[in-house]
Image (cartoon, rainbow, N blue to C red; front, side, top):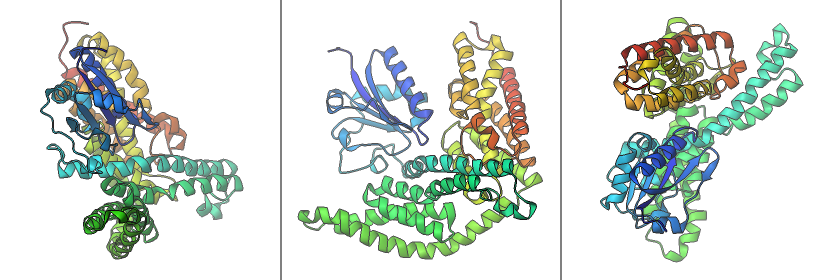
Length: 470
C-alpha cells in the first residue's frame, strides 16, 4: 500500500457532459503534482463511473464533493468532507485537496440527507436551491433533447413529402410517416415538466418527494402553468414532504415503513395538489403572457433578447449564469413546437458555441501569445465548440479572466443578436453542428457563429500578453 496521503472525490454537473469530467481530470492532475493519491467517482450523463467502495471511503483521509446536483452522501458519514460547486473542482483544485487533507474540513454527519440538505459551512441557501433546480434540469434534459429532435424530424419529413397549403397547421403530423415521429417525440416531451418537478422535489426530500413532485409537474402541465409552474411545484412538493417528515417524526419506529409508502405520498399529494390548483391560476396568466411575448418576438426585440442570453452563456462558461440562460432557452421549446422551433434556443446555443471556437481562432492568429500546451488545447476546442460544449474555454478563462471573459461575451452577444434578428429557429436543445439540419436557416446560423468566434478570438488575442516560451 502506498504511503502517500489518500483522498476520494465525487464530481457531478447538471448535464453530466463537460464539468463532471473536467473536474475529474483537474483533481487527478493536481493530486499527482502534490504527491497525493486520489480516486474520483464521476456522476455523469452515462451514470456513475469509478464508483467509490466502502474500502475506498474508509481508507481516505478526506472527501471532496464537487457537485452541482444531488449525489449519494450517506456513505461519507463521519468523514472530513469538502462540499463545493463543480466549478471549484476545476478552478480551485489545490485548495480543495489541501482542505480535504488538513483535518479541518467539517465532519459530515449523515441523517438520511441529500447533498442539498447537507449543512456544511459553505452550503448556503442559494447554493442548495441551485443544486435542487439543477437536479431537476439534469434529469429533464434527455427527455427534452430526444423528444425535441423527434418532433423536429417530423417537421422535416412533412416538408420533404409535402403538405397542402390549406393543411399547414398540421405540419409535423400530416403524413403518416411524420406523424409517427411526432407521436414518439411528444410522448417523451410530455414527461418534461413532471420529471423536472419530480427530481427537484426528490433532491429536497429524497425518494418520498418524487411521486408528489411528479404529480405537481403534471398538474402544472394540465393547468397551463408551464415550465415556471412545474418549477414552483417541484420546490413546493419537496418542502411539503420535509414538513410532513417533521410532523410525523414523533410516531413509533414501527410505523417507519408505512410512513414512506402511505403517509408521505397521500398527505403530500393532498396538500401539494390543492396548493397547485390555486398556484396554477396566476402562473397560467404569467405563462400565457410569456408565450405571447416569445411568439411575437421579431426584429430589434429578438436581437436584444438573443444578445442578452448569448452573452450570459459566455459570462461564466457553464456556471449559474450560463445555466440560467440555457434553462430559459429549453423552457421556450415546449411553447414553440407548433411554430417550428425557438429563436431563443437558437440564440442560446449559438452563444454557447462561440467561446471554444474563439479560443481556436486566437491560438491560430496570435501564436506568440500562447504556450505549446495552449495551442494544442486550442485544437481540441474546435470539437468542443462545434459540439456546443462551452466549458472547453474554461482553462483559458480561469488563467486570464479579465481578458478572456469580456472577449467571449462580446462575440457571443453579437452572434446571439444576429440569430435573433434573422429569426433563426431551433427545436433541439443540444447538439451543436450535429443538429444543424434542425435549424430553420442552418447556413446563416453557422455564418453568425463564425463571425462571433472571429470577433472574440481577435479581441482576446489583441488583449492577451505575449508569453516568453512558444
